[in-house]
Length: 273
Image (cartoon, rainbow, N blue to C red; front, side, top):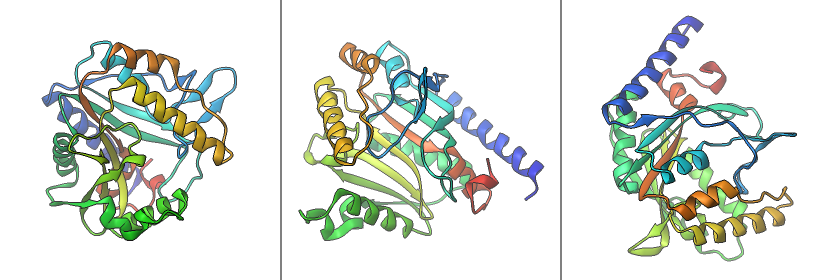
């Protein structure tokens, strides 16, 4: 496909995404990509801008601050940044679509994610597999390092092809900022969408409890220390918003460039960026 064709198709798909949310009365917002604070997640490294703070790895904190201040269901489509190597499926700067739906849980949000994917890629069945099914008995091994489990999980996701798959029932210690299931506290209300072996989206039924947030941030910092990574203090403005009250909602982040790869039958991110 020639450059002009790729550019036109990219613009067309971004227009389809915006029309999808307009029809559902989900409001587009634009939040800062440069902020004084960043995420504590030990599996995500931020890019530091000396004297200013960090390029944001996701608009999550800023969007949740809007929700806590009374915003309706919202979405954002724009650049995010992560300190990682450039490769077939990775780039330090990429385009993310992130949205939050008031009153949704993770299962309702999965249905909406499926509808958007069908609109962009065409109709197709979506299967559901559990985290346990992918990693098997490794999940119960006490001598296994978390990094080894993560690697095994990533390799298992790469084998989920062809087809579209939701991975569900993450273990509680991998809940990130998802709440635990009300009927089973051993698993998180979290999902991942994998299409043809490529991880496309990650979503949660959002955690609301500010005390539990602080506990998870402390656990992140302890793990960062154990891994020899730079300590990151929790974002005070985000903590203040959580104390004010995050409404019941579900949210998801989707890698737009990876979706464009699939839509254009491309092999690498740099072919569609």
